[in-house]
Image 1 (cartoon, one colour):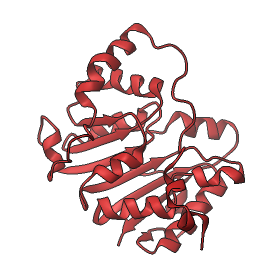
Image 2: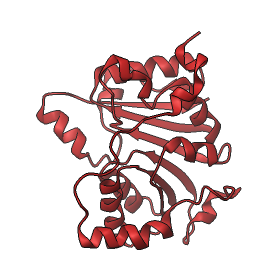
Image 3: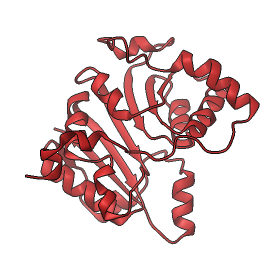
Image 4: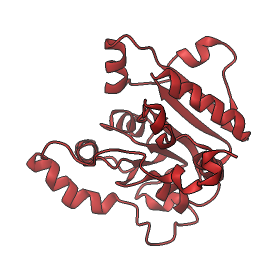
Length: 234
């Protein structure tokens, strides 16, 4: 029996480190005070049966991004897919503030957010309600003793499998070899996710319309290549 099976709650603890960095600029602080309450999911109330009702404008698909960092990817996707409803989860205050600034600048109507643990959102969402989950450059927790903090685990893959629609997509990108292998093995062992790669170019080529992220740029400067894994929920 694995450590996760013996202690399942451990797979839902401490996925992120510090919550706040530099003091926010005045405009960012205003956004956190006014825009965050308007866009934040209310997990104290039951999730609507149809998540599309969370948005003021009509949307057709639902997409969840876990740990959106500076928000570059989330904003890019929201702007290019106006009929997709996005949920972005990010506990780091400064990153949330950056995203909210971009939401205001571009007047985006198809983004909702949550500023705490993504497992809380996953447990709140209705079964079969999400078309795609993006986990991009998540904290790799490189020390082996911290690997239990990696977001990809059997417990969280169960969560993904529950909320994704049949045929839904799980996209994972990383520049850390051990986390890439970790994710491949966990998805293989889970059995509910089919890796879509048939040749090396399938995981070495960025996703269509990929805008790049600051984490990816940092990895390239430091000589690391990235992998872009795509899994389909069985």
